[in-house]
Image (tube, rainbow, N blue to C red; front, top):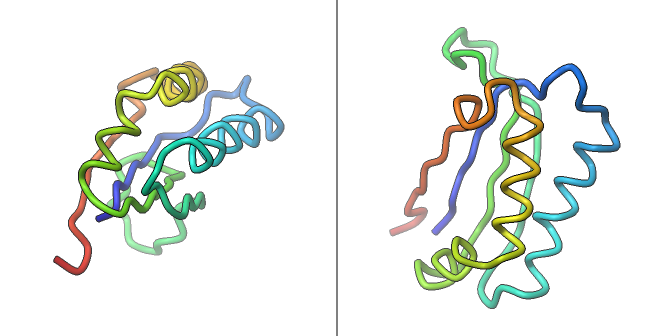
Length: 104
């Protein structure tokens, strides 16, 4: 199972070091969430014109739905999520979240 999350551009005030701190917050959750795997971040590199303004994204791999659910309710996830939303253009309007069953 993998949860994929995409985001619109960071606001102009969001500098590289702030983005790196948000990424580090999410990555740090691997140490406290049993079953949380790889976290990957990237800019959108698709040549197709269908991104609808989303310029960056990240994926988080989870062993199963229980690990994902533990992540969703963890206090550190709430804090990292709040920092992420505050950094996005449009706040929560700049965020798209979807979960995928990979290899199911």
